[in-house]
Length: 613
Image 1 (tube, rainbow, N blue to C red):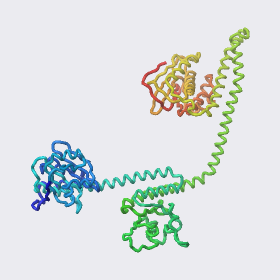
Image 2: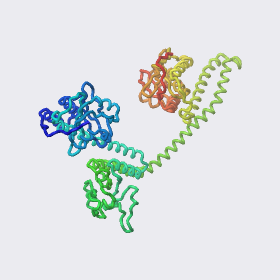
Image 3: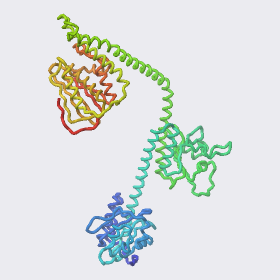
């Protein structure tokens, strides 16, 4: 394999290259896409030099990266591939071009099996002649243009005239794009870090924890070894972080990290004029004033910004010992962090004031809550006691009434026989009232989801509809119909759901005119299973809707119409629905009937279908 550098017979301004360079310069001025510029460059080089392959490869720190490629008769190969810079040691031609900055000529780069990439090696072996054009920015080669021919026609220097000129423009576009990407990357890191700050605000148990976390995050943002807040106390700045106890000076002296907010001009200007401060030890052997910020913080460089509210200086936020030198971006980031931290501190202060102002109110509310809880317990105990005490006499009286109806106690006079069925119905109503009182008293102490199972809501709706048809008596509508869009299941307590639906259907039957229809519709909503119970009764006035779910709440229209009820059914149903994570809603207008909707958290779904009852 032989190589030689370009000679002195090259014309530095060939017409085609000059025109192409002018075109790329126009793209750079208009901020054209650097990758498109590089793709145009390799195509221009391939077409003007008549090669089979042209590749632009950048040298980015320790990586060789294929940025653009042209392949005659096929799609570009290897764009985006990366190789370690150590790979140059296996490629004498490429290494010579990068080292000397001169154009190098030779044979195939794949000779001798020097490539660590088998796919790349296979593609290089058919190449007979290669020209490598280094593209330098200053004294550094930033990229190489590799041109290859499969034919036996070697390259001559004049063919490559002007390629370094236009290639340099492409490299500048690439470098500019990388700088932009670095800025964007820094911004993304900053946004990620600020997001982390917001998590600190949400998770901090106290103010000290927040400022420790914030200081740690700011240090990471500006790539500093440490950062912290200094709070203005009198005329001194005292650190909030845990390092404040370190590095104490002899008795009678201030701690090293305490800063003079009045005597130090730099610090005073920072505090009261709002100017950011940057200091650096340009010479490690320089004589540093022992009272300067650098000396007191024991740092080689410092960046500090004011930490203040809209009107009041709180202190400063400072970072020390940068890994790569502080930048304007770091200053902007710290100003943003300082402003956010000032708002948080104001929040802490407002919270403390609110806590002191609300202490007496909280005590009053706590006492009120205790009284209400006691009243609720007394109510539940009363309902349970009353229901238990009433159950025994009701059972006894109901038994004797049954015996009278059956004639076990002897024949009754005709007038008495007419009264017994009415007394039996009243006792049945009273038994229902006692049962609901007992269920209501137990509802508040029953564990949520204690008997939760995988339940077919369709089957429950059908069972409730069938039961309502057999027990409705003389006020039964012609039809109780169940509609559903599919076999829908929920995770719920089947007994409680059946009780809820039973109460809703019972109410619909009672408040519907004879011969009308009651519809039970089972459907799905996002996140929920809904069961609508719709009647065609007189409806409910808007002002009466809030009364529906109160215990013992009965509508004036129902009382006037003589419709029997306990006033506990909807209260009980609402409580049972809420105990399972659901609720009951109602839509009603006078004269248009009512629709009560039970909603429960949606469970698993089964294949679609329809159930009619």
